Image 1: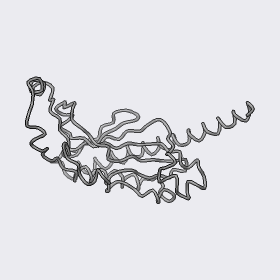
Image 2 (image 1 turned 30 degrees about the horizontal axis):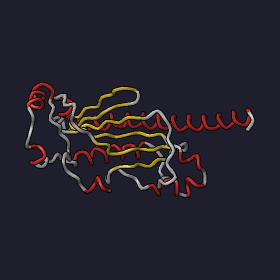
Image 3 (image 1 turned 120 degrees about the horizontal axis):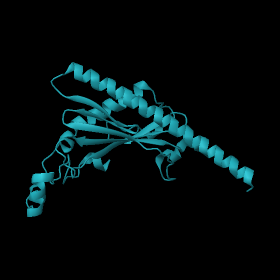
Image 4 (image 1 turned 135 degrees about the vertical axis):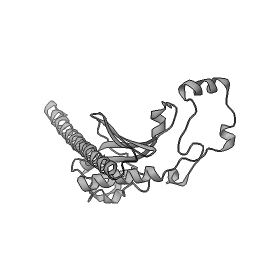
Length: 219
Protein backbone atom coordinates (compact mmCIF):
# COMPACT_ATOMS: atom_id res chain seq x y z
CA UNK A 1 0.00 0.00 0.00
CA UNK A 2 1.36 3.42 -0.92
CA UNK A 3 1.63 6.37 1.44
CA UNK A 4 -1.33 8.30 0.00
CA UNK A 5 -3.67 5.30 0.13
CA UNK A 6 -2.74 4.60 3.74
CA UNK A 7 -3.14 8.28 4.62
CA UNK A 8 -6.63 8.30 3.09
CA UNK A 9 -7.62 5.21 5.12
CA UNK A 10 -6.33 6.80 8.32
CA UNK A 11 -8.20 10.05 7.62
CA UNK A 12 -11.42 8.18 6.83
CA UNK A 13 -11.19 6.12 10.02
CA UNK A 14 -10.33 9.15 12.15
CA UNK A 15 -13.30 11.13 10.81
CA UNK A 16 -15.61 8.18 11.52
CA UNK A 17 -14.38 7.86 15.10
CA UNK A 18 -14.63 11.62 15.63
CA UNK A 19 -18.25 11.60 14.42
CA UNK A 20 -19.12 8.75 16.81
CA UNK A 21 -17.46 10.48 19.77
CA UNK A 22 -19.23 13.76 19.00
CA UNK A 23 -22.59 11.98 18.78
CA UNK A 24 -21.92 10.26 22.09
CA UNK A 25 -20.96 13.57 23.73
CA UNK A 26 -24.18 15.15 22.48
CA UNK A 27 -26.20 12.23 23.83
CA UNK A 28 -24.39 12.42 27.17
CA UNK A 29 -25.06 16.14 27.47
CA UNK A 30 -28.72 15.49 26.68
CA UNK A 31 -28.75 12.82 29.39
CA UNK A 32 -27.32 15.38 31.79
CA UNK A 33 -29.92 18.03 30.90
CA UNK A 34 -32.86 15.63 31.06
CA UNK A 35 -31.65 14.19 34.37
CA UNK A 36 -31.56 17.68 35.86
CA UNK A 37 -35.11 18.35 34.64
CA UNK A 38 -36.47 15.04 35.94
CA UNK A 39 -34.82 15.42 39.36
CA UNK A 40 -36.09 19.00 39.66
CA UNK A 41 -39.64 17.92 38.82
CA UNK A 42 -39.53 15.08 41.34
CA UNK A 43 -38.09 17.31 44.08
CA UNK A 44 -40.83 19.88 43.52
CA UNK A 45 -43.46 17.14 43.51
CA UNK A 46 -42.17 15.41 46.67
CA UNK A 47 -40.06 17.81 48.78
CA UNK A 48 -40.09 15.39 51.73
CA UNK A 49 -37.74 13.07 49.79
CA UNK A 50 -34.28 14.14 48.69
CA UNK A 51 -33.79 14.23 44.92
CA UNK A 52 -30.35 15.52 43.94
CA UNK A 53 -28.50 16.08 40.68
CA UNK A 54 -24.73 16.51 40.88
CA UNK A 55 -22.41 17.24 37.99
CA UNK A 56 -19.06 15.57 38.67
CA UNK A 57 -17.12 16.34 35.49
CA UNK A 58 -17.46 16.65 31.74
CA UNK A 59 -17.73 12.86 31.57
CA UNK A 60 -19.65 12.01 34.76
CA UNK A 61 -22.75 13.05 36.66
CA UNK A 62 -25.00 11.45 39.25
CA UNK A 63 -28.57 11.57 40.45
CA UNK A 64 -29.69 10.65 43.96
CA UNK A 65 -33.20 9.57 44.83
CA UNK A 66 -34.40 7.73 47.91
CA UNK A 67 -31.78 5.16 48.85
CA UNK A 68 -30.18 5.02 45.41
CA UNK A 69 -27.57 6.75 43.29
CA UNK A 70 -27.27 6.41 39.54
CA UNK A 71 -23.88 7.40 38.13
CA UNK A 72 -23.65 8.09 34.39
CA UNK A 73 -20.20 8.01 32.80
CA UNK A 74 -19.11 8.46 29.20
CA UNK A 75 -16.09 6.67 27.73
CA UNK A 76 -13.96 8.83 25.44
CA UNK A 77 -13.07 6.02 23.03
CA UNK A 78 -15.03 4.39 20.21
CA UNK A 79 -15.64 0.64 20.25
CA UNK A 80 -16.47 -2.05 17.73
CA UNK A 81 -18.19 -5.32 18.61
CA UNK A 82 -16.71 -8.78 18.25
CA UNK A 83 -17.78 -10.89 15.29
CA UNK A 84 -19.80 -13.09 17.66
CA UNK A 85 -21.90 -10.22 18.98
CA UNK A 86 -25.59 -10.16 18.01
CA UNK A 87 -25.22 -6.66 16.56
CA UNK A 88 -22.78 -7.87 13.91
CA UNK A 89 -25.47 -10.16 12.46
CA UNK A 90 -28.00 -7.39 11.87
CA UNK A 91 -28.79 -6.42 8.24
CA UNK A 92 -28.49 -2.79 9.36
CA UNK A 93 -24.82 -3.35 10.22
CA UNK A 94 -24.06 -5.71 7.34
CA UNK A 95 -25.18 -3.01 4.88
CA UNK A 96 -22.57 -0.63 6.31
CA UNK A 97 -19.87 -1.97 8.65
CA UNK A 98 -19.13 1.55 9.91
CA UNK A 99 -22.46 1.44 11.72
CA UNK A 100 -20.97 -1.05 14.18
CA UNK A 101 -18.54 1.54 15.63
CA UNK A 102 -20.13 2.96 18.78
CA UNK A 103 -19.48 5.29 21.67
CA UNK A 104 -20.41 4.02 25.12
CA UNK A 105 -22.21 5.49 28.15
CA UNK A 106 -22.34 3.43 31.38
CA UNK A 107 -25.03 3.56 34.07
CA UNK A 108 -24.08 2.37 37.57
CA UNK A 109 -26.32 1.87 40.62
CA UNK A 110 -25.03 2.40 44.16
CA UNK A 111 -26.58 2.85 47.59
CA UNK A 112 -26.55 6.46 48.82
CA UNK A 113 -25.32 5.30 52.24
CA UNK A 114 -22.23 3.81 50.61
CA UNK A 115 -21.12 7.34 49.73
CA UNK A 116 -22.60 9.21 52.68
CA UNK A 117 -20.82 6.93 55.19
CA UNK A 118 -17.63 6.46 53.13
CA UNK A 119 -18.13 2.71 52.81
CA UNK A 120 -15.43 2.32 50.19
CA UNK A 121 -15.79 -1.48 50.05
CA UNK A 122 -19.46 -1.45 49.13
CA UNK A 123 -20.43 -2.74 45.71
CA UNK A 124 -22.27 -1.03 42.88
CA UNK A 125 -23.77 -2.56 39.76
CA UNK A 126 -23.51 -1.75 36.08
CA UNK A 127 -27.18 -1.80 35.11
CA UNK A 128 -26.94 -0.50 31.54
CA UNK A 129 -24.62 0.45 28.68
CA UNK A 130 -25.80 2.78 25.92
CA UNK A 131 -24.13 2.38 22.53
CA UNK A 132 -24.41 5.16 19.91
CA UNK A 133 -23.15 5.06 16.33
CA UNK A 134 -22.32 7.55 13.56
CA UNK A 135 -26.01 7.92 12.60
CA UNK A 136 -27.13 8.60 16.19
CA UNK A 137 -28.77 5.18 16.29
CA UNK A 138 -28.48 3.42 19.62
CA UNK A 139 -29.21 0.29 21.61
CA UNK A 140 -28.82 -0.60 25.28
CA UNK A 141 -27.33 -3.63 26.97
CA UNK A 142 -28.83 -3.87 30.41
CA UNK A 143 -31.34 -5.25 32.84
CA UNK A 144 -34.83 -6.09 31.69
CA UNK A 145 -36.40 -2.69 32.40
CA UNK A 146 -33.57 -0.86 30.66
CA UNK A 147 -32.27 -3.07 27.86
CA UNK A 148 -33.32 -2.44 24.27
CA UNK A 149 -33.44 -5.25 21.72
CA UNK A 150 -30.50 -5.27 19.30
CA UNK A 151 -32.99 -5.71 16.46
CA UNK A 152 -34.23 -2.14 17.08
CA UNK A 153 -30.77 -0.69 16.36
CA UNK A 154 -31.82 0.29 12.83
CA UNK A 155 -34.83 2.33 14.00
CA UNK A 156 -33.88 3.65 17.46
CA UNK A 157 -32.53 7.20 17.26
CA UNK A 158 -31.28 9.26 20.20
CA UNK A 159 -33.58 12.19 21.01
CA UNK A 160 -35.03 13.81 24.11
CA UNK A 161 -37.92 11.36 24.39
CA UNK A 162 -35.66 8.31 24.19
CA UNK A 163 -33.19 9.86 26.65
CA UNK A 164 -35.94 10.58 29.20
CA UNK A 165 -37.21 7.04 28.80
CA UNK A 166 -33.73 5.65 29.53
CA UNK A 167 -33.39 7.75 32.69
CA UNK A 168 -36.84 6.87 34.03
CA UNK A 169 -36.36 3.17 33.26
CA UNK A 170 -33.00 3.21 35.05
CA UNK A 171 -34.52 4.91 38.08
CA UNK A 172 -37.37 2.41 38.10
CA UNK A 173 -34.98 -0.52 37.98
CA UNK A 174 -32.85 0.87 40.82
CA UNK A 175 -35.95 1.56 42.92
CA UNK A 176 -37.20 -2.02 42.41
CA UNK A 177 -33.75 -3.55 42.99
CA UNK A 178 -33.98 -4.07 46.75
CA UNK A 179 -31.32 -4.65 49.38
CA UNK A 180 -31.54 -8.25 50.63
CA UNK A 181 -30.10 -9.75 53.80
CA UNK A 182 -27.00 -11.81 52.94
CA UNK A 183 -26.99 -15.52 53.94
CA UNK A 184 -26.12 -15.88 57.64
CA UNK A 185 -23.27 -18.35 57.05
CA UNK A 186 -21.48 -15.88 54.79
CA UNK A 187 -21.29 -13.14 57.43
CA UNK A 188 -21.25 -15.06 60.73
CA UNK A 189 -17.52 -14.55 61.39
CA UNK A 190 -15.42 -11.41 61.54
CA UNK A 191 -11.81 -10.95 62.56
CA UNK A 192 -10.46 -8.31 64.95
CA UNK A 193 -8.89 -6.27 62.17
CA UNK A 194 -12.15 -6.09 60.24
CA UNK A 195 -14.03 -5.04 63.36
CA UNK A 196 -11.50 -2.28 64.04
CA UNK A 197 -11.71 -1.14 60.45
CA UNK A 198 -15.47 -1.18 60.63
CA UNK A 199 -15.34 1.31 63.47
CA UNK A 200 -13.24 3.79 61.51
CA UNK A 201 -13.58 2.98 57.82
CA UNK A 202 -16.87 1.08 57.46
CA UNK A 203 -15.10 -2.10 56.29
CA UNK A 204 -18.18 -4.35 56.07
CA UNK A 205 -19.29 -4.78 52.46
CA UNK A 206 -22.87 -3.92 51.58
CA UNK A 207 -24.47 -4.61 48.21
CA UNK A 208 -28.00 -5.17 47.02
CA UNK A 209 -27.38 -8.81 46.17
CA UNK A 210 -24.27 -9.69 48.18
CA UNK A 211 -24.09 -13.47 48.46
CA UNK A 212 -27.02 -14.05 46.10
CA UNK A 213 -27.30 -15.12 42.49
CA UNK A 214 -30.58 -13.78 41.20
CA UNK A 215 -32.42 -14.41 37.99
CA UNK A 216 -31.87 -11.01 36.38
CA UNK A 217 -28.08 -11.48 36.56
CA UNK A 218 -28.35 -14.67 34.51
CA UNK A 219 -30.36 -13.02 31.73
